[in-house]
Amino acid sequence: MRTGARVMAAVLGAMSGLLPTTGTAAQATAPSVPAVSVSVVTPAQAASIVKAYLRANNAANAHFNRALQDRHEAGSAAVIDDAYFRIAVKVGLPPVAPFQASGLKVYVPRQPRYPALFVAYYHAKFSGKPAARDTSVALFQRRSARDTWRVISEPTIPAGFEVPKFVVGPDGYLPTLAGTTLAYSPTRLNKLWIAAQTADAAGKPIAAVWARTALLKTFGQSTSPLNAATRRVVSERDTFKSSPFAPVCVASRRGALCFVSTTFRSAVTVPPALRATGYRLWILSSSDQYYSGGLPLGRNYVALTVASQREAAIEVPRAGSPGGLRLLAQNFGRLSGTGTRG
Image (cartoon, rainbow, N blue to C red):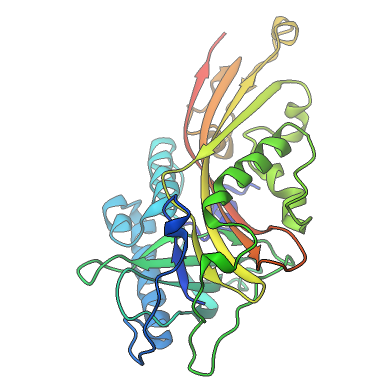
């Protein structure tokens, strides 16, 4: 785990109830939950689970131990973090420093059976430094009594940006969520989110179904493998598609906070006229190596293809409520990269 974008910047010096959905409208409605007092996880237990996870995560980070990491992560979180470990070992990045959770908050629905989920908010706190102002939003899941709790998604809310609110009942639990109460079915989110990313990458307006949150205005700026000066002179084309992980939603004050993920591929080419002048894409730092997907230091290329994965948390309003879809958190990671010499 890289605590969203926070650890990446530190290492590289760079830059309710819960509703799992599986792709059909019928499955987008939460099953009825009996009015019972028991729950397979309590808020106090959830807080302990987060702390135990962070201890294991620090141990995995110290040695880029994917086997240990995969005992505590799944879904898009594991895809991004496993790829980071592979690239870090390949290019010789330093281990991630250990950190603790500052300001930990957990939001738990009352769930009488597995699979079960809960959400945790926290700020990464590294030794000798103030706690990060970014907020990590971690989605934990346990699929069965025989399974373990794992983080399956962890987008980040940038410092100073809107933080989604939850309504916790007198019993300490979130209310139950039914997909039919939402303005947009969770099964539509992947398609709507891919369309928004595609429009943003092409410099076109994003559809009106999206509220103009601060993050929506800036989310695409950090994902290019190129700096702004290079982007102005080369050709870059991004393509997006759904990841194999279905959206998962938790009841929020406005409606539901839904976790989604997509994969995207950035194809970068130096135009022939510029290539003739000797212009090349150089890999000159560990940051360049990570953002290019692990290409060798000191090499230059006329074209790059970089595969990445993005996690996002999108708030969906209730049916009949004003306002559109709200992008509130995101995180991305490089998966791989190839280059063409010339």
